[in-house]
Structure formats: structure tokens, C-alpha cells
Amino acid sequence: MARGTRPTSRDVAQAAGVSQAAVSLVLGDKWRGRVSETTAQRVRDAARDLGYRPNLAARNLRLGHTRTVLLVVPALTTEFFAGVYTGAARVAAAHGFGVVLYPSPEGVGPARDPFASAQAALDGVIASSMAADALTAIRGDQLPLVMLDSDPTGSLGAATVNLDITDGIRQITDHLLGLGHRHFLHLAADIPSWTFHVRAHELARRLTAVPGTTLRTAPAAITIDDARRAAETALTTPGPRPTAIVCDDDKLAAGAYKALRRLGLRVPDDLSVTGLDDLALATALDPELTTVRLDAEQFGERGMHALLAVLDGREPDAGDIPVELVVRGSTAPPSAP
Image (cartoon, rainbow, N blue to C red; front, side, top):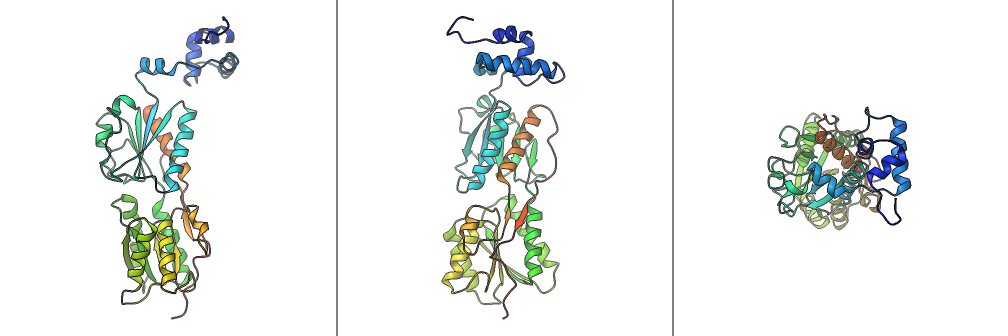
């Protein structure tokens, strides 16, 4: 090979002592069952030693693929969606794909096509926490779609990947009931999303099964100020005062903390507070927040693996991703009346 000349697949084949077809199989990660592990390693070593880089643009044009995936999220207002992107991009990179992150300007509602033609620019779409019909403009009837954090019975996607939110609410409820709480305030995310409907339904279902419990609901946008106002209003409304506040999100819990301070109440002496997500904010609060840990990176990884399976004609792995209650200083037995 002449000095300064870019190495080709033929050069790699000659260096490894194999055919160009074998080089294509190995570097395209399609060698299993066709060439031996030893041969595959020899090809990889030769490509590395020669500094060979495949012409992805030419290969994609030839194959009719872009090896690009779109990850659609409602917003970039929390670190959770950054974690989803990190996990998805890690798996994508290992398989030669790139991930474009698109925060939909419409939130969970219908998302506009960010490209002149998404179907020409993408191989597939992953949508996190979006409404079932929100991706019509982007995917049309062609692009493979994987839905994250979405209703598996109403999803338009080829696959749905969910965290076990129902179990997360069960863990929170059992923890608070075990401490002796019977009067609850649900600081609920005011967002028309499947995941928040699941939280409200499961909380009400579990509390209804326990005699002597009460549940009041206060909807709020997921901001600290909106949560503070909603919690203040709920806690100053006539009637029995709750002893525990169950929040749909850690940001809502931070707003509840501010409301309690303004009302001269203490956490957890006067009221226990729980969150959901386990953001960095959870340990910045004082006392630190009892919350449910959602593994956002694993969520993104599973979503990308599911899309790769769909693209490859395989069945994605089934089963929700486990979640974990993290008990900290914001919960305690209710104080005496």
C-alpha cells in the first residue's frame, strides 16, 4: 500500500489472509456462524494495524440504511432523560449506530418531524414517555418504533419497554402504611401521560384496600414553584391534614418541602414526603428524600436493544425493568395528633 493512501477492505483482506467477503462480514458484525472466531479476530487485528475505517456513507447508501436512530423525549428538564440518552447511545455505538436526541416542542403530544423526511434520514425511532399517537408525523407508517414508558396495550410501536412503575408505587405505599400512615396527599404530575395515570391508579387502588385511609390529590406541573403552590393550597384546605405526601417526581417533592417550611411544618416530624426518580436533587434536600430509584441508563439501553432486535427481525426481551425504593430521612411514623 502506497504511503498516504487510505487502506481499503482489500488491503485488510490481504493482511488477514482472507477474502473481502469475510472482511465485510466481520466488520459488519455479521460473521457469527459464517467465519470462525479466530478468523474474525485476525480481521479485526489487521483492520486496526492498518488504521482501516469503513466508508460508512457509501455502505449506508448501498444498503439503504443510515444507521441513525432518533430518540424523542418530552423535554430536557431533568437528568432522567439525559440518562436514557446515555444508555441508548452506549448500546448504539457498540453496534455502529448513532443516536440523535430530539426534545419534542409539544411535550408528550404530537411531535413535529425534525427532518425534511425522517423516513429518509433514520432507521428507527425510540420515544420515551410520549403519547401513543404522538409520533405519526415522524415515523409515518414506515419507521420501526420502540416506545418507552408507554401503555403496552395502546402503543403503536413494534415494541414497548417499561420500568415497573406499578411496583414502585407499591413499595412506597407499603413503606408508608408500615410506618403507620393512613392520611395521604398525592402531589400528582399534571401531565396526560400513561406513566402518571399508572401512579395515580395504583396508589388509589392500594390505599382503598386498607380500612381507615384517606387520599387527597393535588395536581401540579413538574416545577418546584408549581408544586409548592399546589401543596400549600392542599394543606391549608379544611379537613383532616395528611401525614404523608406521595409525590410523582423528586422535583414535586422539593416543592412540597418548600410548602411545609412556609407553613411552619417539619419533614418528617409533621409530614413524611416521598418522591420518584432518585435524581441528584433527592440527596441535596434536607432531610434526604425517600424515593424510588429508576435506572434511566438501563432504560435507554433496553430501549436500544429492543430497536436493534426489531431491525434484525428478532423478538425483543420481555419484562419490565425493576425499580428500587431508597429509604432516607424524609419518612418516619406519623406524629401524635
